Image (cartoon, rainbow, N blue to C red; front, side):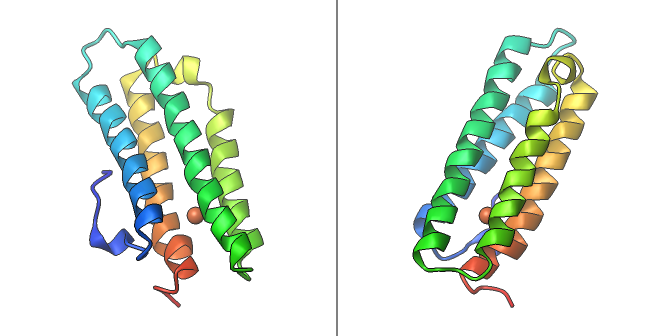
Length: 131
Ligand SMILES: [Fe+2]
C-alpha cells in the first residue's frame, strides 16, 4: 500500500509531487500503525490524520484550480469525488478509530483504495492519459 508507481503519473510534475506527498504521509502513518505496540500513541495518530486531510484538501484544490483554468468539462464530477472523499473522512470518529490497530488499518485500506482508483481514473483523465 501507498507505493508510488508510474501508473499514477499524470505528466504534471506539480500534481504528481502532491500525490507522492499524500502517499508518503499515508505510508508513514500506516507503518507507524503496523509497528505500534499495544499502547497506541493516540495524540500522534489524531494529528497525523488531520495533517493527511489538510494535505488532501490542498492537493485537491490545486487540481480544481487547474480544472477551472482550463475549463475542464469533467470539473463538477471530479470535484464531487474530492468532496465525498473528504466528507467521508470527516465522518469517521477518529477518537474511536485510533484506539484500535485494526480499525486504523481498515481506515488506511479505504484511503489507499480510494486514492488508487481516483488517481488512475479521474486524475489521469484530467491530463488526457486515459480515455
Ligand atoms: Fe483528483
